[in-house]
Amino acid sequence: MEAFNGTAVVNMTVKKLEPVLVNPAAETFKGLYFLSNIDQTFPFPIEIIFSYEGNGMGNENAADAMKESLAKNLVQFYPLAGSLTLGLDGKMHVQCTGEGVPFVEATSDCTLEELGDISYIDSKFRQLIHYVDGVDSILNVPLLTVQMTRFRCGGIVLGIAMNHILMDGEASLYFLKSWGKITRGIHLSVEPYLDRSILSPRQPPILDIPHPEFVKLETKTSTPSYQESRVYQSFCFKPQKLQQLKQLAKEKGSVTNPTSFEVISALMWIMRTKALKTEPHVTIKLLTAVDVRTKIKPPMPECYFGNCYAVSCAVCKAGDLIEKPFSFAVKIVQEALRKVTDDYIKSTIDYYEVTRDVLQAENTAWISKWSRLPFNEIDFGWGEPMQVAPASMVWNFAVTISQRRESGNIILTLGFPESVMERFRKMMLLELEQK
Image (cartoon, rainbow, N blue to C red; front, top):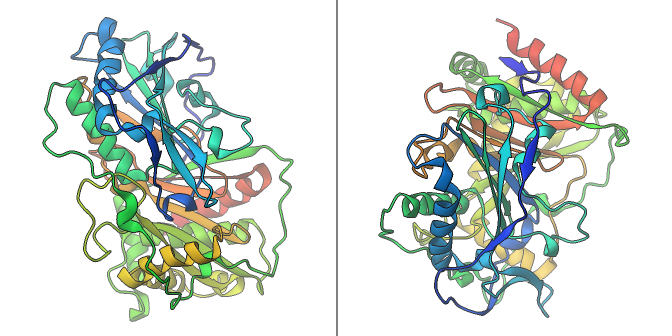
């Protein structure tokens, strides 16, 4: 395993034009658009960048072509052209107004080669995103923004900022692929399924399954100084190392068929607990976002556009996680993931309807599996992207993503206060370099 210590260009500058609003190319629904209870549970922005060599569609007219195809795509995905509002029921809804999506054209004075490996987080990469900081509410975060940056070499970086309230990774992938097809002149054969009432709570709601992911833990761990700057680091898990971890997890027969994501999640959780110096008696949790499109009964429409996930929750004492064999951590992660069944999903929807509880962060680690999503297939006429990576991270959140389509490597990215990251990095590298 290797850690990326920063290969981005030192003095990248990006010049941006003023954003323009891209409106749907035809008349669309106007009024309140219902968001499900699942939509309400993760109110954070997601930022992701795609780097392209820029071959194919002429760069001079690329921005105009992208805006034109975006306008066409927004006819089907019209909620993205609206804004968030708080309803009388206390839930968030989309006010569909057709006001449009902010689109920014930009240029950079460096090349994609100088930009370096974007599969780690670097604050410079946020220059490639049109983002809104300093707002007092998620209601003021745009549902979608786009920035298209041309580089000196002719390469292009597309920066996408999405409000997670409206779509999860699978839905954003569907939207971006549809946009790419329209840009390339391909007619959409299937329209998005926009009716989110399919995930409405049962009447009456049934609370027959415990949901520890929403339960606040009473015990507290030692808290690092959040006055320190946040440091993000990425670690590369190569296929050979993943195979070694899977074999380690299967020792003594306690774990069967562990996945790459399960062993990465378990190792991250162990190292995180050590780096934070969590006291042994403290109860800790690992929350994982699980796509449930095929788990819920009946299965969701293939083209469902919205959030469709449940959160698995692995729980144990910090001392057990640290002191017991690696297979212990992998097993409880695996068991938590397997609990996400049709009943669990529907119970989650009902639980929020009754309690309006939010997912708890105290003594909790988060992880999401972006590595299952083929973002590297999104083609706007320049071919498939050379690299895809998050431009920023939600605090206390880890993500796995495929490094490159051909390599088989999986990148784990996460952040801590500087002193905690130093401990985490040293322990993680030492642990994985052991033969």
